[in-house]
Image (cartoon, rainbow, N blue to C red; front, side):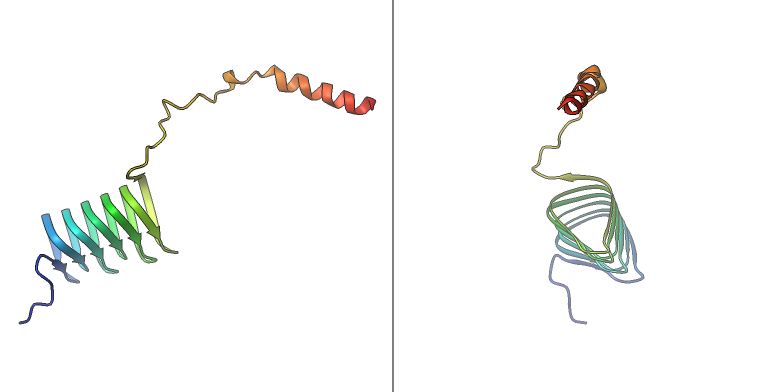
Length: 145
């Protein structure tokens, strides 16, 4: 039987179920079901494939489903048939028409604005009487001209 996968790669075929913690130095291609923790350089989830667990890679391409925690250190591509749900962290992302993304999304390298540090925008900061007082005066001036 000839090897079709390069050394350091993992292929989970259609109909195969795997569970556990896997570290793959190369490409992890999933066409079956994988549950647990998967770390690789490249993760490719095929149309029939699904991964449920913590997934970390430099490059992630999803045509099937990916749920739980996803970290794409460089690129994340969601194909038109792909669905990602959960906590998603990425450096660069592409979502093709029809692709689905749900959950919390964080971009690597971008500081997320904090609601605590943002200036308050509550009504108590805006004088309530000022706009109401200016509007009638402006209307009266226009009527007198």
